[in-house]
Amino acid sequence: MHYRVLGRSGIDVSLLSLGTGGASQFGQKTGVDDAGRKRLVHVALDHGINLFDTAELYGRSEELLGMALEGVPRDRYLLATKWPYRRGDEFAEAGALTRSVENSLRLLKTDVIDIMQFHGILPGDYDPVVDRFMPEMKRLRDAGKIRLIGFTEMMTKDPKATIPLKGVTDHPNDWDVIMLKYGILNQWAAKEVLPLAEKHGVGIMNMAPVRQTLTRDDERKALFDQWRRDGSVDVSSLDENDPFGWLVHDDVNSVIDAGYRFAAMHSGISTVITGTANVEHLEANVRSLEAESLNVPDYRRLLELFGNSAAPN
Ligand SMILES: NC(=O)c1ccc[n+]([C@@H]2O[C@H](COP(=O)([O-])OP(=O)(O)OC[C@H]3O[C@@H](n4cnc5c(N)ncnc54)[C@H](OP(=O)(O)O)[C@@H]3O)[C@@H](O)[C@H]2O)c1
Image 1 (cartoon, protein in one colour):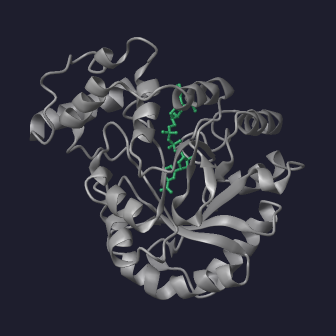
Image 2 (image 1 turned 135 degrees about the vertical axis):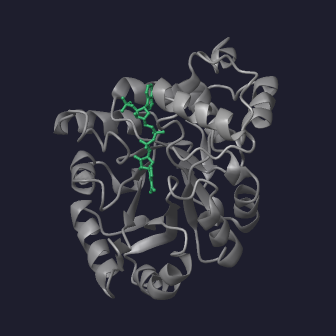
């Protein structure tokens, strides 16, 4: 496993980390049982993965992750979790963040959360979130309940990463970590956010690197059809039925493999989170990030083709 430094925190983080959300939700949605989750987590640890991401909103993921990690020395892993600052149309009330952190600590069976994040800040919500809740977040850090402060973007509502850009522009010293999506079809963050994050030492967790558009032909087809209609991304040079076939050669064995490699190639990325709960897929993704990067011509072609792409998924 390769490691990178998580921004100015100075913490070494594995290049691949394991998420407990997404479509599988740590196997809650894909029929994995507690023993299977424990195996998944131990396979991850054995491969050197040292960061696990979860959230209050991922079903029972916090509790299940706490169970799967039971008995593992706490200094072998980092825990990231999230707080939903909204309840439907309303912002959460004062004190709700502290109660949520206490609950997460209990479920995760730990006395400190390494990375505490505001979950999915929506366009328009950035300023009120910072004004209302940052002081409470900082008090939690001062009290030793959390170590690093971050937020995640809502990629489906903000594919051009305007909220991460606000974060690294307006308060680069308050955010230790930002979680965003950067991938073959989502390169927008490379324009400004990633260079600014590197400049200010903000760690970047790259979520959902393959998600739907690189794993499902129907989703990819719908997206490419839309791009053909609106002209925003020129995909006319690609084979309609197999647009990524040219990427699969030598030791790159699938577009998913290429997707993971691409997701880690920007130096502004600290770690790439995989959301699989399938051990074989996890091990394939480990191999992708232990392998060489994509070759330069293929990488350049992806930048030329999709440098202005901002797929929402
Ligand atoms: N706003 C937010 O805060 C936010 C949003 C999204 C994600 N996240 C975080 O990022 C993590 C990852 O997100 P994600 O799960 O949506 O995205 P992802 O990891 O890019 O995609 C997961 C999907 O890709 C498939 N997959 C992964 N590796 C594969 C392989 N080697 N071969 C075949 N299929 C493969 C998975 O199927 P299988 O399950 O069959 O492997 C699943 O359908 C989440 O768990 C969460 O921690 C945060």
